[in-house]
Length: 434
Picture 1: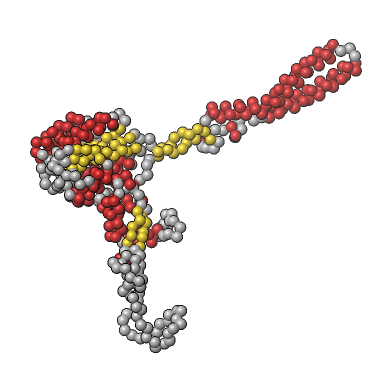
Picture 2 (picture 1 turned 120 degrees about the vertical axis):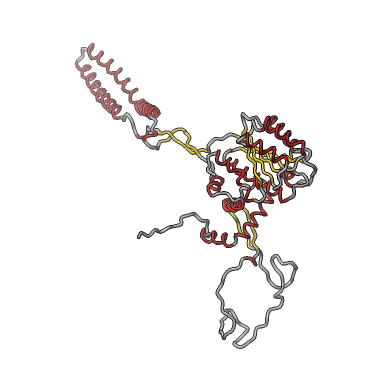
């Protein structure tokens, strides 16, 4: 039988242990999850992917310890004792009930302990958020992965593999090097050859023997120099390693186009805080999905009762204005914003709508007409969640619409763990098996 040794080589920060950190998260998972829930409630959708500092009450950090049982006779040695001897009875210190740290009442005596503050990394925060949504592991990986990269040409370098060698660029460099190194020698060769021609003409015309000998000596000297220069020029290598140039490549993010996510929510009197909280998590999940596919994402928030208006994210989730319900008012405004600011030639449009399903009875058919004729032909995906169990006329209209359009999805969401099924088909279409 073979024995395998598994070595954990994950990088840990200074004075930190990955194993101890994971054990801590498992032991206090309940408290950490509650802290993450509070953080999500206080964050905007754009800021969801950040770490978090969480505080756990000291009283909750119970650790198992070994101790002596009750009874029996024991001798104990306390270091630093200068006041007591064997047999003395030590009185209980006064002010033992004083409060400290996060106590309910102030006290001028006694001691307390502050809450334990623990910093969650971005990855740990998102992992706990995904667990609340009950996402499959494969989808968690798809959402948590870093953006894709591709190799792109980035000029030339002196180092590389033979298959990246650029022949033309290398030969051009070799030619330039040979020209530069031999320029002075070739110039001197031309001067010597011209001088030799003149001397040979003088030698043929000279009648004085002494003059002929001088000219012959100078010709011999110039020919020796000429042979030396030609040898030097021939010694210049035709191709040198410094001439080689290789195609250089760098990794860059995969270029993607822009996307806009429209968040549409009913804020009528029947939409309480719990239903708004479910809607927010639904919007967060779609936003996280889009951030993995697009570099630039804009968010547009449209809230409605009997009238619709475009608002900020804070007003979208926390404004107290309420009224009746006319869903078509939001769809009309949605169509106007799309047409005015987000042409489909430049933007990928996604719509997320959340409602309790309540609507004015005569308005639901108009919603279907607006969606089918104006909005659905423009968007890549339209997701509708109903945060209530009761099926009303709006649900029936939308159900018929979803049968005719594959990029229109609708689900009921009564709990956080039920949010993911809304995205099942979306992930499947984008290449991630749900």
